[in-house]
Length: 299
Ligand code: ARG
Image 1 (cartoon, protein in one colour):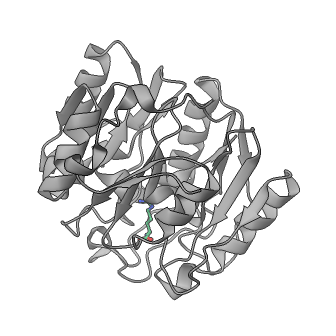
Image 2 (spheres, helix red, strand yellow):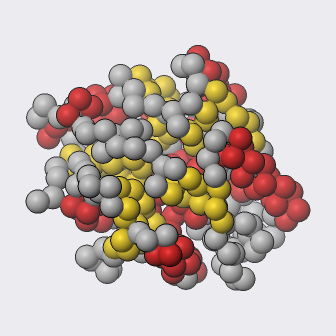
């Protein structure tokens, strides 16, 4: 039996955070070195005018900084071998969605990327998670689009998935997620192309607190966020775009690895009693990605 999928507050019918089961967080982080990282076309509005403008050495140093920040926050980082001609492969959040079933089985649901040039990335993540003993799952609808951890985000510490759709992912993959992971899913419709993946506008910090960019969502989605999270802070457009402020990544509900330019977000994070670990991801912003996009989760 698949769990419920919610699209509006009226559908919640009593569902609240209290009814969501606990779930252990990830044990480690997966990254893919930016050996072939580049901007060669326009897949999202961040990439406009950026073709050929990536400073490769700086990107490499910035990527190492993100890796060190995850390790310093207590998460071991594994890496996947980069492949030539796959210029977006360093954004390994997008190739699959990983998590645990209620019995503790580790599951990796493979993505079906919108852009043909990114489809070959998926097999590399599949091989990585298969070697770790994960159960590999495919979407039932082989025509649907789904971009993994870029659009599907676990609620911190809870068996509850937030599912973004509208630009890179369709709705029906979330039925597979609800069934596979035995988890309720709350759907969030993205309406502003600048915020094309959920992880560009929605950054859950703890079970109670989330940073968002409110204008990225339709009214029903915003209402769902406000209903479920006791604390919601919206970051303004300039910081959300220029500093990719909502693409930070929380580690163990304690440390948030985030681009150093995310000034207001950093202040809010600290005011909530969490630590901020600043990194520089400016080269990756040229492609529409920052910390959260540069990693996937190992459970
Ligand atoms: N250039 C990549 C693309 O447009 C960036 C992906 C960023 N990933 C993310 N999870 N937001 O596909």
